[in-house]
Length: 155
Image 1 (cartoon, rainbow, N blue to C red):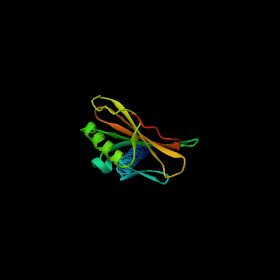
Image 2: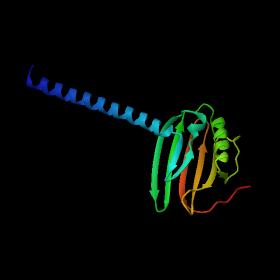
Image 3: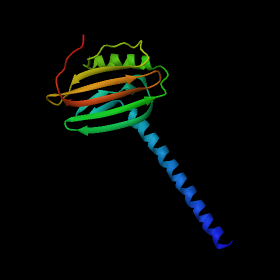
Image 4: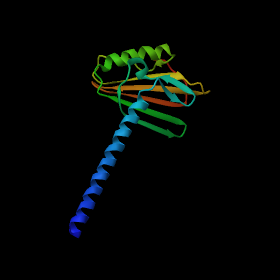
């Protein structure tokens, strides 16, 4: 084999190894996100909030994000490829109400897309937890925010 062919072979093998490494890390990351999204509770400091998957079973988690700015902590869990969004949300709403969450917006699951908000007192003095459910026909996002505040019930 001449020198040019050896160099081309080394470059080709390097590219193949690089691509395989990226695929492995992508697969591990997707698996890890799904594991973190399919938990029994969402935790916000000392508070444990029942997760939607503890009510409806495992769901595909696409994205989990975390942010802390000023005195507000935010976590978002995005679930995709859901077969019956409205049934999942309806069951989860009942669970939230059984766990001292009050709705702070009206609930109308007849709409294709929507936002439903709940709130509850935190175990940390002067803090509340707001839980927003944003949904469309085949996915939903559960967003939790914890910060200083008071509760107001929507009638």
